[in-house]
Length: 81
Figure 1 (cartoon, helix red, strand yellow):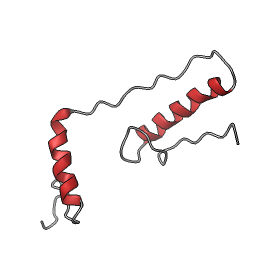
Figure 2: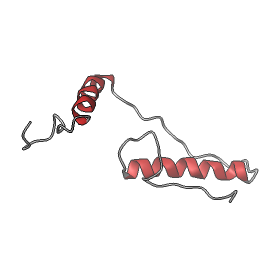
Figure 3: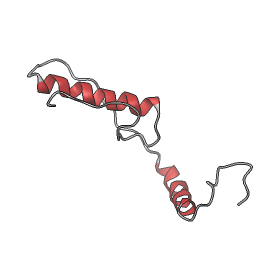
Figure 4: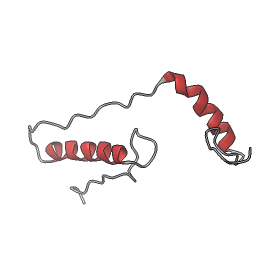
């Protein structure tokens, strides 16, 4: 189906968790395809790149290492280590 475009929080975007932000980003990408598909010069939706603070990268790596063997996140409160 040439004019079938998916959008929503289940579509892969730059936003990691399923959220309204991710759904909104995927919707903007889908809407931006419509003028291209219909040969229109309509203005495109603005899509911003997600800002990822470098300061959080070490914490994300630790969390990933804990996730692999099934350990809880460092930030999960109330759970045994």
